[in-house]
Image (tube, rainbow, N blue to C red; front, top):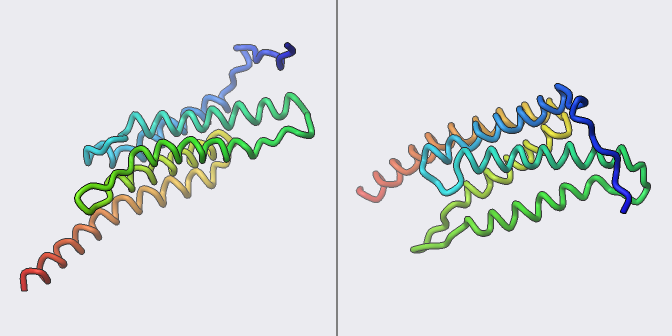
Length: 158
């Protein structure tokens, strides 16, 4: 069996370390809310998903550039990531007592996957925008949901 040439360890450059490190840190940050609220997938899960997606992106693009084969499609990594995280997310979502649980956690994992892929591909403007928007949504929406819940309880009590 013919394999692609091995990647010498001394060629491990700062770009790869930065991409994987950024994915790990951002995955932990995105997972902090889930951890804080005691949900099934917390910081470790989000960090692992994010850095795994980044590692997959780096590996796929490196292999694509090495092989120079016209039939190789690096965009299939998105299909694989979506399929995998879809299975994980579906396993998290539970319908109990008339309510859906862990839907936001599943969406968080999908977001961690996309952030990881963007980190692995070095798409830094996209990484920055995704991270900022996700943190704003998760923090501001917690306050909005709390306010709406209080308002609803007041309307029910009147």
